[in-house]
Image 1 (cartoon, one colour):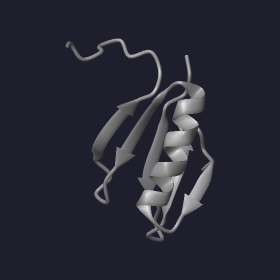
Image 2 (cartoon, one colour):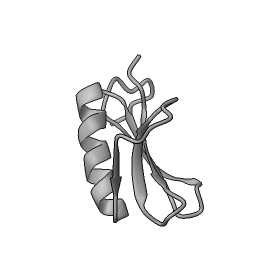
Image 3 (cartoon, one colour):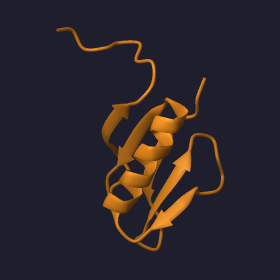
Image 4 (tube, one colour):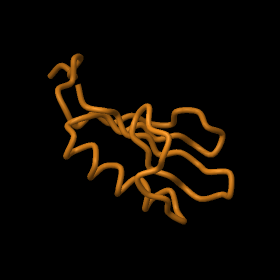
Length: 74
């Protein structure tokens, strides 16, 4: 199973792209949008899920780029 990719805020008000259960960031950027773009690319390559966290740390959005167990109907 591919590791999910998270976009999270760092302590110094930057944005980090991390894979699940990783201690190091793949990339640290100045803006959330830059981190999302990089995270999306990684998630597509890994066929995994991109999980975007807001400034408060709560999950804001999820996007699946792999085999979705619950695809939308229709």
